Amino acid sequence: MTARVYIPDHEYKERIQKAAKLAADKGLDILIVNSNEADYANARYFSGFWPLFERAGVAITPAGDAALMVGPESSVYARDFGKIDKQFTLMEYRESANPSYPELKPNTYREVFKALGVTGSKLKIGVASLLDTSVVMMEGLKSNFPEAEIVGADEIMVALRSIKSENEIACMREGFRITELATQEVIRTIRPGMTECQMVGVAQRVIYENGAEYEGLPMYIFSEKSTRHAISRSSHRVINKGDIVQLNLSAKVDGYSPSIGMPISLGKLTPERRAVIEFGLKAHEWTQANLKAGVLASDVAKGFLQFFKDNGYEKNYLYGPCHGTGMIEVEAPWMETSSSYLLQPNMTFQIDTFVTTDTFGIRWEKGAVIREDGCELLCSPIGTIHELEF
Image 1: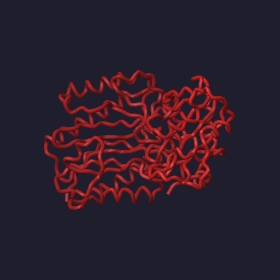
Image 2 (image 1 turned 30 degrees about the vertical axis):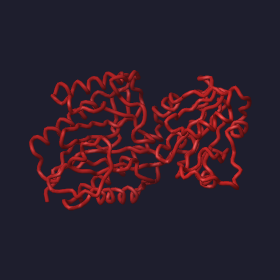
Image 3 (image 1 turned 120 degrees about the vertical axis):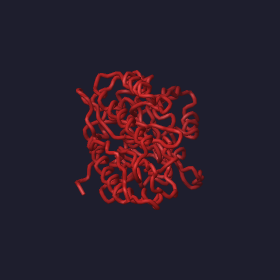
Image 4 (image 1 turned 45 degrees about the vertical axis):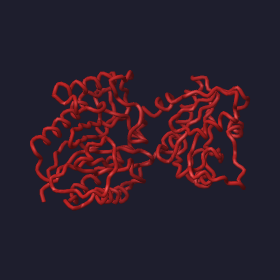
């Protein structure tokens, strides 16, 4: 196993300072980001802390002071793992079983703010993860600060997380390295008669043996009609000879979650199936060739859609050519026909090419980082059409 790849402590402090400046530019008195176990990214981005069962949040002032907010059962855990010295326990971040903790004397948002030097009642509070902010959290803020103006500030996190540091890119490269090993082992060991879940177990063993902290996404290996699912979960379905099997495997490294996707066939492909797989690969390669700094994202997406139309596959199109990737395998920004941003150096994307038909679907997927003169792949090239004989 190689030496562990991770985000150094100083980078967490630098992130807080960058967020503080953006909060000041937006005229905020304080910025709050919230996360849960499934989408932990915003809180972990600043704190290194990944909640379990409970939720977590980070508060940041324009002066650059920060606090980590956790649930009642995470206080010791957060002190051991968190990168932020100031930590508070709030009922708003408790687990979904909704225990009362009658003996607990929790902190409040008002106490957190005061400890960060934010006082007064008519505050402008930015919440930078609205989809991960529960009603309980929002009501807690409102009850503590009934005169406050609470505004969405998601664009702050998109701006911060879209451009990756070299340490972040190194974590992603390591995740891809491990994922490649898992992919190779699944292709080596898969046989008719095995179940989808059994093969996920093979992939899980490999990623943990080779240094992953967790799956980067709920890894899926599914077959035949389930391959039509753009997102799905593996099942106890038995894989049969002749089946198309979709692999999408991922290894998480210090919070970063890249993935590799490809179709394989347990036996020779019919000409019709091969044509779909080959078209998907050509569309995938078209995307890769059109990624570079300075390009308008919508131009790539429009060209990708036109590629489907020109080749007679418009009805098989579902979504655009790329989505952002990093701490969460799918993160902002998406690359869509409505996207108005320019590609910038050190933006990272999953080149994600999904083609669906009435009976099966396929996906080619890998990661890339935008450079001035093109894109740099973060894993080995993919494109081999595997027809496994037994």
